[in-house]
Amino acid sequence: MSEPSRARTPAPRPVTAEDVADFLARHPEFLAEHPDVLALVVPPTHTNGDNVADMQRFMIDRLRAEVSALKSSHQELIATTRTNMSSQRRVHEAALELLTARTFEELIERITTDLSIRLDVDVVSLCVENDGSVAPKVTSRGVRLLKPGTIDRLMGDDQDVALHAIVEASPALFGHAARTVKSEALMRLRVSPVAPSGVLALGSRNENHFDHGQGTELLDFLARVVETTIRLWLDLPG
Image (cartoon, rainbow, N blue to C red; front, side):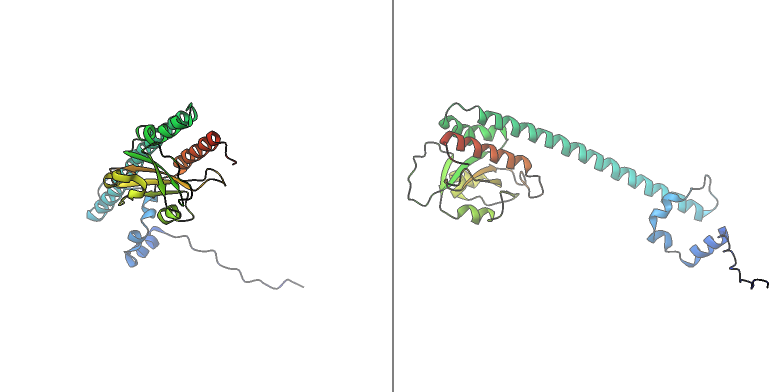
């Protein structure tokens, strides 16, 4: 017996230039809605009427805009990289200075005075919460005592580093210098389970010197160095 005949599916007709032209004529918005397709189009090498000239000009303008955007992004990336490298160098140099302090008093002096120069800020405060049961002798003008709960109120109870681009600085943190501080960075200090909460506060007279969009890794590293050096000098448990 012969096999039953099978219906053959006709092969699809190749798309012709006329088909493409007809589709674009019926959908004139297609290229505007799919500009990425233009990157695949080979522009004409000469003018064949107004329509071709307009298409070529559109493609050239689009490529020029893309090149301009790439150049701008490249320049911003270079500037950001240079700034980050400078900040990293400053923080590392500051950390080394803290680690080489010869006395506890010298350590506190370097934190509250020398850090402002190293980090290019206007004021640095080392603040510690105190409920009044202990009356420590504060010998440095950069060391300030805070009421319990102040740090959580200013930073939030779940933040280790808080950056404020524009701020009305708290006198509790900066004393009389608060009136000049327009931007601040606050770093929580957890020196020891047996020590009160603390915060290292950096203040700048320039708005947007610190910004919440900036990375906080270097500042967090600096805070950990401050914690460690204080804990070692006071012989506290970690």
